[in-house]
Image 1 (cartoon, one colour):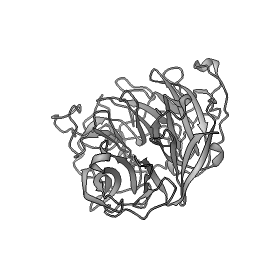
Image 2 (cartoon, one colour):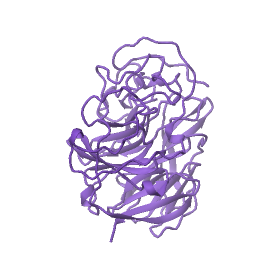
Image 3 (cartoon, one colour):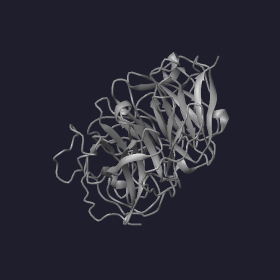
Image 4 (cartoon, helix red, strand yellow):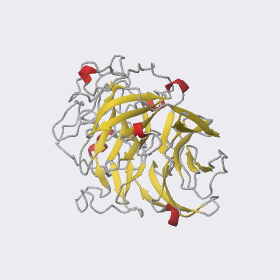
Amino acid sequence: MRVSSFLIAVPLAATLPFAACSSTREASAEEAAVQATPAQTGATAAADPAQCRPLETRPANGAGQQPAFPGQTRGCGVQSSAPYDVQVVARGLAKPWAVEPMPNGSFLVTEKGGQMRIVSASGQVGQPIAGLPAVDARGQGGLLDVALSPRFATDRTVFWTFTEPRTDGNGTSVGRGVLSADGSRLQQVRVILHTIPSYTNNMHFGSRLAFGSDGMLFVTMGERSDTITRPQAQQMNSHFGKVLRITTDGAPAPGNPYIGEAQVLPEIWSAGHRNVQAAAVDPQGGLWVIEHGTRGGDEVNHVQRGKNYGWPVQAYGIEYQGGPIRSRLGPAATQRAGMEQPVYYWDPVIAPSGAQYYTGSMFPAWRNSLFIGGLASMRLVRVQMENGRVVREEHLLADRNKRIRDVRQGPDGALYVVTDDQAGELWKIVPRR
């Protein structure tokens, strides 16, 4: 394993003592193909955790850990009055990682191995789009997220994240290009952000893209999993374990909290994240990320400017191999002064990937809900939000036994999902007739 030599420890919150460093690697629930025990679904309208039946009834991995406030975990189960049907739009997608609905009813789909394709509204899967740079598709790497420019109708610009092969390892990078009129190739392609440092492993690259209401681009990152890299989520000269905010040209976005500070990367918006593979913006412009935790620590975070979300010194759950969460910064606690608590967490985990804050008219009962894909849990999770808190939780698609990699809302108000399979599918969720 190699990591760039410029790593100067610049703590974001408190200065913490360094403990002995271990180089062991940690498995991720994202890579586990086992299905979680089906959760029980209760129908209730109560938001008070003491007055409802939670969906999750299995023993917690973090035995003895207590939430910081009522309703932070094991929320009220609900069965919404929104019956739905699932239509298979397309089959035969090779490990699809992201789906992006287009204005004309087609879809851009990324495949982990490095291909981007257009799927027509009728389900015809197109040839790979030419012009993409090479990717490192080992492990959790590859071609990752894709997002249309807010002005795509006029500029036809596409953005994507990918694991970039480098001479000193690999790393998450952001590319942009202009989609040709016939959709066959990307032109004017350039990499607008090479995150640093490079590192040699194949885990925890992140990475989702989300445009803010101001047109700036959020980029979510992972901390590369290994105990030797975990502290970089708290080091401000590293992009690892951060949410970044950039312009569409890749420059640090105006208003970022650390512009001009010595030894701090100006793209950083927030710190202390583990592996963020789900992000969505709400109607008020707030950014929500859902990140992979350890064994019993997946989190929903309402990400705000300059805040620290704790990893690896604040976290719920335990190591995958058992025992307390470790890093060279010392053992983790569930609460630390100066660090933000997750709005919600799952123990056991759902293994989140892809998110959508629903605003459409097709499902009025689902407005103000955050939808999250579940990999190991093999379901689509809906959490109902009120006043910035999760008040109810519902699990959908669990009977289909498919790993959900991404979920997006289309212009028509339907939800579109891609499954994480060697022969993946694109689904459309519509009201039942």
